[in-house]
Image (tube, rainbow, N blue to C red):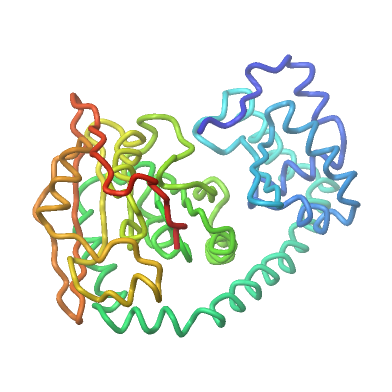
Length: 344
């Protein structure tokens, strides 16, 4: 997934896009955090149609990017991202300097940012309501396996010693894994299919710099990214939702760079059939042999798994490294419809 770039836009159009006080304010807000169009209108104190027109001009100039999530459209600035062209990156720095040096512009930007507090609070309240509705289900599932803290510690140990680079968190859920690794990765892309969960994750991760975290709606069976885009790919308690795990891992391999790594945290094979109906699990865990076969067929070399046996169901951590010379092999699906379950 490449960001828009101003390099393909005539330079006069780029500067015209910034020749408006409101668009300058929008550019600085989007450098702070990703915002929905309605949230941006709230921060600016302007109507949504008017803000949408300004946003359209910035997007056409490659200075901002739209991303649709259901009926919502989220916006982010492009200047602070690695994929930004030199002109966009330079303009982002110029605006930061202008804010530091020009008192009137600095005050307008500071006033706008103060209004972000109400937006952050609204996101957190919506997330808390979602947690309240589902807390019982999650507590029931957590009681079956090792504590979250133990799993997180062992996962960090398993990934220690190598740079995480650009990390893709597939099925980010509440955003906990993205938050856990944000400090040790160059950048984290947190992906989920479920719109409600993305909004929970956005509330949890909104304290992170906008250039450090991206939230993306997408399906693990058809990832919306270019090949070889990530250094590390993480699937934390996600693969058991896949009707066709081989397809999900083939997609993970496609977007992983040569010699990049994949980390899978999931249940060892078990017989708790009620998880199929109560929690929509398509797979009752995975054996080490099954996982090794899946990883090998997808183009990964697997290391020895880590087992956490602190509950009725064993949690396993499988680490694989992308083989540079091999293309992923698509394993035959046991489900002819290949229906994919929603990410948690």
